[in-house]
Length: 613
Image (cartoon, rainbow, N blue to C red; front, side):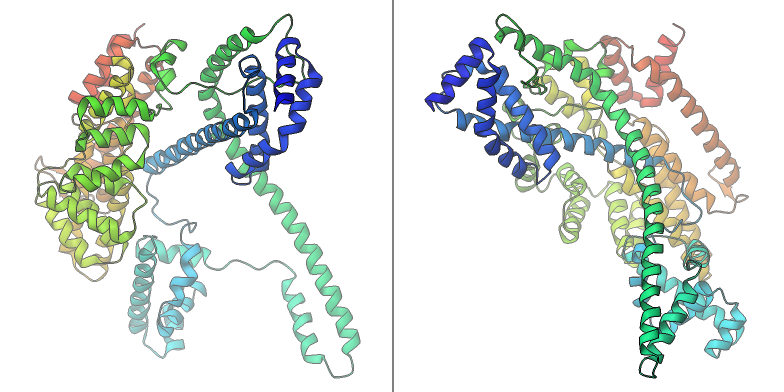
C-alpha cells in the first residue's frame, strides 16, 4: 500500500509516465475483472470502463496521493463508473424504444398483414387446429386450390367446402389472436395465399433426388459409388449454402448497420451538446491538478461526468428545448426525498416520484398503501412487467375505483380480446359506450411531475417542460384495441350479424373521438392517435352511410379527418423550429396553453407570436 501511494504521489508531483504505468500494471486486472462482471460479460464495454476508471485516477491523483486504501477506491470507482455507463446505455435504449413506439402509434394501419408478425407463431397455431380444419386451410391457402378442388379432396360440395374453409380460417385467426397477432379474415387469407409457401432454391430438387435414391440403393452392390456421390452432394450443398449465407449475411449486416447508424445518429446529436459542456467542465477540473506541463499521452483523458442531473446544468445550454426536449433527466434519490418530504408520501406524490426517478420501489409503495386510488391502479397497469393475472387484478381494481371512467373498460376489453375472450370483451365495450367520462390523468400526471422537478431546484420553465413529457403507453394499447374492434366487426359480418358489426365500429370511432378532439392537456401525439383510431373504424364502414347528427356521411368524416391531419402536420412543421429558439418565459405560457386548451392550440399561439420573425 505504501508503494501505491508513493507511485501516485510521484505521478501527482512529476507526471511520471513510468510510475502511472506501474500503477496500471498492478491493478488493471482487478479493475477489468470487476468491470467485466458489472457489464454482463461485455468485453468492449469492460475495456471502456477500465479506461475511465484509470482516467479518473489520473485526474484525482493529487487528492488520492495519501489515500489509505487505493485498491478499495479503485474497486468502488469501477462499480460507480460501470453503473453510470449502464444507465447511459439504458437511456439510449429507452429513447430508441420510445422512438419505435411513436412510429408504431403513428403508422397507418395496413389493410393486409405483411406476415412479419404472423409467421413466427403460424406453425404452432396451425398445429392447434383439428386435422380436418388444418387440411382445409392447407389446400385452400397453402396450395391455392379452388373451392371445387377443396371440395373434391374433402368429399364436400362447393358450398360446404366454402363453409368448412371459412370456419377453419376463423379458428386459425382466433388461435393467432391468442398469441398476440390480430388480423381480419380477409387479410389473413391474403397473407397465407401469397406468403405461406416460399419457392425452394434452384437445384434443390435434383439434390433431393440424388440423396433420396442413394438411400434406396444402399446394399445393392453400388454402395461405394453412391456414398461417393452422396459425399460430393453434401460438399456441394455446403459450399452453396456458404455462398448464399455469405451473400445474405452481408446484405443483412449492411441493412442493419445502416438502420442502426441512422437511429444512433440522432441520439449522438442529442448528446453532443451535453457532452461538450461536460468535457469543458472536466477539462477545467483536470487543469487544476497539473503542474508545469500537460499529462503525457500514456495517461488517457477523463471522459466521464461526475455530476447528477440537477439545475446546475441549466445554464450550460442555450434553450430549454435543446437541454430537455429529447431526454428528460431523472431525479436522484436525494432530490426525490426533498419532494416527498415537502408533499408527503401520498398516492399522487409517490407516483410522481416514481415517474421522475424511475425507482420502481416508489410505485410498489403506492400500490401497497393506496390500492383504492384509481390513479395508482392506472399506473400499475402501465408498468409493463406484471403477469397476466396481476394485470387482470389491477384492471378490475381500476374499474371498481373509477366506475364512471370508460378508459378502465376499454383497457379491460383490449386484454380480453387479446386473450380470445370475446364475450367478456363485448361486455366491457358496451359498458364503456354508456359512460361519458374518459380520463387518462395525463394533465394531472404532468402537473405533479413538474412539481417534483421544481422541488428539486429546476426553474419553473424547465420543470413545466420536463413534466409535460410524461410517458403515454396507454396510447399504443388503445390503438391496438381500435384494430381489435375492427377485426371483431369483420367476424360479426362474416356470420351475418350486421347490427353487431356496425355497433362495434361505432364504439371504436367513439374511442378515437375521445382523443381526436384535442382537449385540455392532450399532446399532439394523443390527438393524432385519436384521429387514426377513428379513421380506421370509419374505413371499415359503408362510406355512404350517415355519420353523426350533422347530416354528414362516413366519407365526409373521412375527408374531414384527412384535412385535419394534413393541417396538423403543417402546424407541427411550422412550430418545431420555433420551439428551439423560444425563451424560457414563453415556454411557461406554451405549457400552460397545452394544459388549458391542448397542444394544437398552444402551437397555433406559438406560430402566431413567433412565426413571422
